[in-house]
Length: 85
Image (cartoon, rainbow, N blue to C red; front, side, top):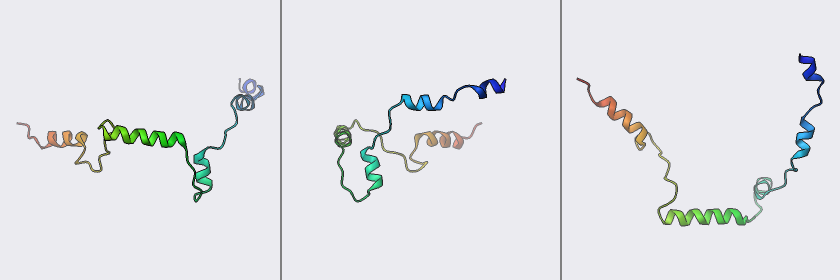
C-alpha cells in the first residue's frame, strides 16, 4: 500500500505553479530597509478609518491589562468570595 503512494507523481510542483509568485510589499521593504520612508495608501486609509471610528466611540475596546480589570476574572472571584451556607 505504501509503495503505491510513494510511486505517484509529486503534487508540490504543480500546486506551486498554480499560485502566482509572491510579490514585494511595503511591509517587506520596511523590514529590509528600516530607515527608508515609505507610504502605503491602504494602510493610511485603514488607520484614518480607525481614528474616525474611535472618535465616534465605535472602535475596538481597550485591552485589559490586569486580571482585576477583566469581567471574566471578576465573576470567578465574586463567586469564590461568597460563602455557601
